[in-house]
Image 1 (cartoon, rainbow, N blue to C red):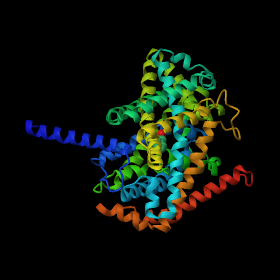
Image 2 (cartoon, rainbow, N blue to C red):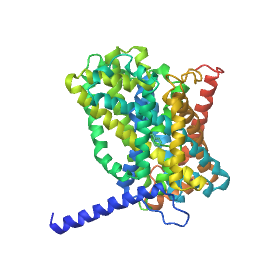
Image 3 (cartoon, rainbow, N blue to C red):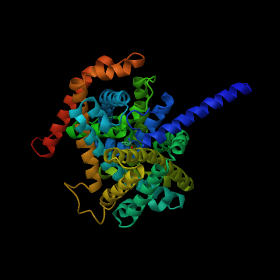
Image 4 (cartoon, rainbow, N blue to C red):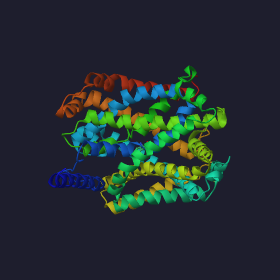
Length: 484
Ligand code: PHE
């Protein structure tokens, strides 16, 4: 490359980074109407930012334990079908609504149709409930990272270590506060652009690590059973509960049905192609989840011989199985474990930052207060709501409904109740109130919309009927009206 070319290249790269930086700072300050809204510098910038929000604990911690609980292959099939149909439809819709209105969820709905503003309000409640318990689990990851860095990997692999830790009084609380503080500092100082740039290196590294550990996990005795289980569908597991869980996981993992993608869309350039971007985000997010499952599930089988309790370990699965696997690597295990938990911590941070940013902007917009005040309210609320989740396995375990801990309850209410409701309302709103053509014309501002036919059928009929059927049957099932 000639010197001049190189300079030009550097210059344009610098420009892109600066615009990107500006965009994120701007996203923390909602511009008033009439302000020109900045946008992502290019499609890659948009895709990376959206993927940073999407790839997180949902993929590495949540997906594998759900896949194991719901019969491996059965869950995978339903999940994949949902992602390419429903997930695609909803993500395209949210991004298009955001770009069209140039607003975040709370204003976008009411701007398009005043009476429908309430959907934006339900959207707003979701990140307020998710952020606290997300930070509790982020704290667990931080704790395990420090355990491995300080050479206590073997101790952390001992039976009962994880349960003792989350059942304690100070420990889970302290780690929750540490993680929350980390997230708050980034949100407050706006050092987000640095984090985003670092994630360009750390995300690929995380994937490389996942692949490496997956290969190792395949070499363990008994892993083959786990691989078979992971891919073979169990017909008896195709229940409404599985469908509900897979749907909730899809919303959660792709950061859908809570208005976040509407906000991201509002910063997307008119010249970018929405459909192509959505396909990239969806494959990236799903790929990481699949890989994480392939890494953990065979290991669970290798260590437990497919024991029911281990397969159904739930939220603790990653924290019980991964330390065992690292310890089995011998002396290098501490290093591998430390790097693994550090990368997971990073992926979690990029997601919790986008969650907390959303909460801050909701308060700043709705209460018309300064950003600093909105930060103080959001941080305090997240702390207060996080305490019962942090202590829900120990001191506050009496707060439970139907055997669910407080953390599980928050997870259930958002993923299995509120998000399906938002998704249903969004489909009805677009399908019958503002009409699919509103979204389609936004997507077709530059190029054709390849899955247009599928989109219309889905948004009007298939998706809403599917959500309703899944919601009703699982409510009836849990009330004991039907047994499935
Ligand atoms: N999608 C993130 C994950 O998989 C969670 C998240 C949801 C982040 C909503 C931001 C907004 O971990």
